[in-house]
Image (tube, rainbow, N blue to C red; front, side, top):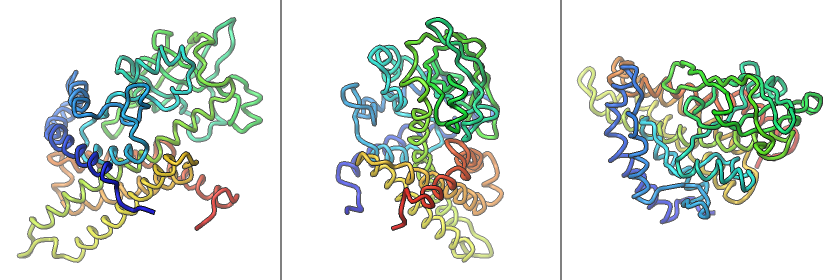
Length: 389
């Protein structure tokens, strides 16, 4: 067992941090001002400019297989990269990647959707959640009915990340109602790749944070048979894989943000004086800082364990749920303490703390709520799928 980063991993981590500090953090004031004025966080073309700089530094397709031009650094490195990028709230993601389930496409689908997505020519989104069906897939109502050599999709999806910008969607729809009910939502649904030009529409959903998901409306959207991704009636498996991958990434982002914020709190506690001495000398502040540091470290190891398990080719879903549950709650707790330490200034929009506060509240909801993660973890233990120790 080796509990330290390798020399290569440490080198990558330092390089990413340098990129974040040089290219992203200096943009934070502009992002805050743009968002206060109701403008996009980054001006048009800025994301592509930043991605180009990252590519020139050697970071393109962090986890994309080498055969598609990616760096293929593995899940551990992806976790480390996500932690570093999350040290800023400036919206950024490295170019050269695609949704993990797109790799299950046939050669034609890879040529039409996967490769253009990796190259940045197309944007995708994944749609399973509905107004009446989140984690409970038995309540899915979006349907796909065979019509000649095509399928007609009808229904509505909600809270879809990237749905307003996407060129195509990987949408889950019920294709066999009886099988869907008999299997408690685990079968009878199929994943379709639907281009925006096929007729689906998106509507912006306003939230308490800066994240702007979409509602997707399908009204007799005609999708050809060849756009079925994976096997018919087995789209649930693809959905699980997509969501499972995203879960531990939430934990990684929480770790990165919490580390940056705790450093802000430490600096402020050493500078801010009350009654003749820095507030960092007050036990009430010391304990908040100590608890935060311990929780961040614990969350970090949960995330790295989930990533390491995946790198070994093993099932990491149990560990991914643990990383998501603990990481998301840790992030919320730390940000709340940091805001409290900063007092009234932490509540203002002059500092980014309140922005992170609003964003962090979402971590406990999307890609599986706290309650769903607890259900998964306890069920695995009670049924003997996973043993303690």
